[in-house]
Image 1 (cartoon, helix red, strand yellow):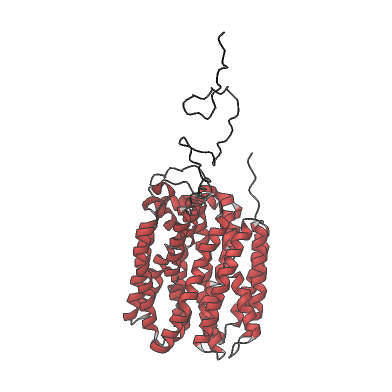
Image 2 (cartoon, helix red, strand yellow):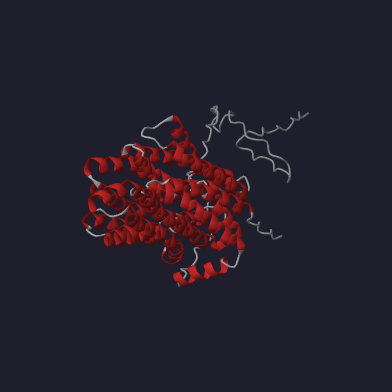
Length: 464
């Protein structure tokens, strides 16, 4: 009688026996990381896989290059208030004559901006910015050999004005529009603060040079600072995210690089004529003209000589202006953050109202020595210095879309025209009345007008 043996059942882990097929849709159990391998050797715990480190988006490095470039160009903006006295003493030119050169510079700084924005669309950001830095360097260096007032207007006013206008806030607007789809308010605030950072970096050095060695070494320093930034721009700045195969920051879609736009001057004028038919353009231009009058034209140009009139040393007054630059950085970055979250019209109204109040008190605070109320003014005014830029640029984007950089260039032109008028009138008022008080009071009243104008800017209707 034959004994029957039961068939052996193969272990599912036996390597010689193929695994039974898994029915479709049946979940597969995860492999045990500690199970023995094919040779019976127990396996250790699985090594954790580290997530790949994400590199910062290239847009941030472009923003850093732009920031440093604006700092280099801002060296010249620290000079006018320091040189009015030395030029008056050496050449016996009136303060009104020197103020005229400053006015030409400030006006061209603004009037060049919209054409520079259009030229960036035609020839690229790098070429336009490098040419502007070279013009600043040449103009600053040539002033060392000037002997007549018309040369001051030509070198200091024309050449430096054209060069600095090529790196005006329209440059920051173009970079922001091309490289960022989110965080635009914050980036605008950071790039706007670069001008104040340049003031912070250069003012103490330049005031020491003027006091210890005269105004010529200060002018040479400005020339060298501008020229040193040129290779930095040429090697590291890129015109468009598509140049490096990236999408703008905050977007997942690579935007093709637009073709060069011919007729830069014609386009700048066409955009102006189209924008000039709208009410918001004139309100923004008017408020920004008052902004320029109450900052670059008034305080940046005349604060140091006004404080010096009251017995304050030149280096101390320049140091206070540098402290304004410190708090300007904080105020402008915070303003960019606020612009991403709150209505821009209301922000502008608050900024202008607070600035006007502070300027009305300034003539009462000027004294031979620095005292706590003056320090309070410096901090308060510094936080508000160019905090108006992020909300103004945001309103330009809201109203004018793809043309916003050029429109903002024209609005910036109004800012600089306002600054130019007060730079000249401030010097003329000092010659006529012996003080700057009337200019401070008038500027404070104008800021109140700007606050009211800001609230009348209509909102652009939303399209569904």
